[in-house]
Length: 627
Image (cartoon, rainbow, N blue to C red; front, top):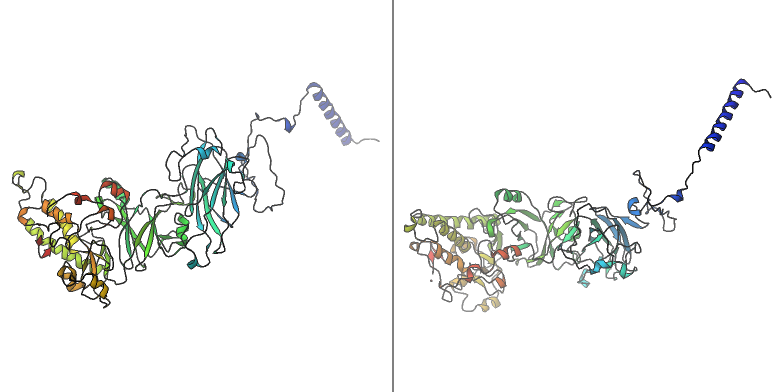
């Protein structure tokens, strides 16, 4: 067959190409390698692709492809096994767990940066964890500390709250770092995992690891007394705990006082420095939130250390969905020991004659909160107990007075006289008037005279003025307690007068003080103006501390004529009380509170103080007031 010109040229080209290939194979002998010949030493260069498989959409019987290339470790691929949720550094993952089941998680530990050292902490942050537990997980060289924390946000609730005082069983945390136990839980070997029960809805655990950390959260079976499911949030971090709590230290919250419907609580000093810039910075912030709950309500049992649990179930929450709750008002103050910054909380709308628990907390790490932040889940402190007064309504909290600026407690009151603001102004104005009279007398003293002519080398007129103000505010503004409070250091007042609602003391109460009910000390207030204008009815007074009077005698010129009633003599027991640190607040002084914190206790700002001084004391009357 005759080829056309184009076909002839094509055939020639094909033949020439074949000849060139044969010549190349003859001169060069290349060896083509199989993929199986690649060794561990081969360098690997990966493009960043998302190769994860959605394990949720895959059924339990579906085949799962698990590549096991020697050069591709699972930690590098970054994919959790089927049925296991991957945790991200400082990211909380919410999860439901049914009773009798386990939810599994995996956290891949990032490589340890050069120069970093390993430091293990216990659940409260203290260095020096017993390493016996960690031996179960195997020793790992150049390990990195992993902090695992979780909060129970929801738990089964009693079907009938009146039939049980206990909460449901706590969740349980299982942790493993061995590939032989990628599903830690109640069915796995105890030698290959560490087990921790949640504590009041919270758990904290840290360990040293270099590869994958496998975590299981198990929900125990619950009895028929409870209904509902568990919901929790879990987080892992290589920096610090995302959720944390502290129950080993003394409470950081101080119960100042309460009335029938409200309570005032305050933190300890937030700094011990008098640096103005530091104080200003602290005063511009509100680092804490607070929760309160009636002890008779059992809905927070098992959740008292869980930040999200308190947000969901505390009767009074400092914040709801990130917003301040209406029943709590908070602000910064320097009132109290040291004149240093503190944060105070005032609760309203409480039940009368009720016992409450107050829980101080920090939203996040005091500066930022939420996912992606170290410690962003929140911190819960040890709870503080407090109670409210009866519904007689004749004790009311006053705070933030202009002159007696250290006064913050319940005072004799009457709803018919006015609200707390009116009551506060009544007491504060009178104290200011009395102080102005005293100041005129003090102005007659040669306060600026040379040292050889002064009344004292140890004290001056400023000391005298401060001592008098402390005493005056404590005496003219009595601290009020319910009449049915049985404490023996309280002084009954106004026994024959009716309560604001018109009720009189019952015969049993009057009989208890038979023979004394008609005396002035028992049948009137210390300050006659209280009975004349306020008319609070029967109450008991927390008497001023004896050292307040003694401090005036010590600090002021003798020419002013101050003296004090003598201990164990007539008039002393109905005029002054004595400090007793072991019994709490047994007498009143400026900045006093029912409970105290470790910070102030260590400074000696509360406690016995002046009561340690043995003094022989004689009666002070100044400006019409019985000292």
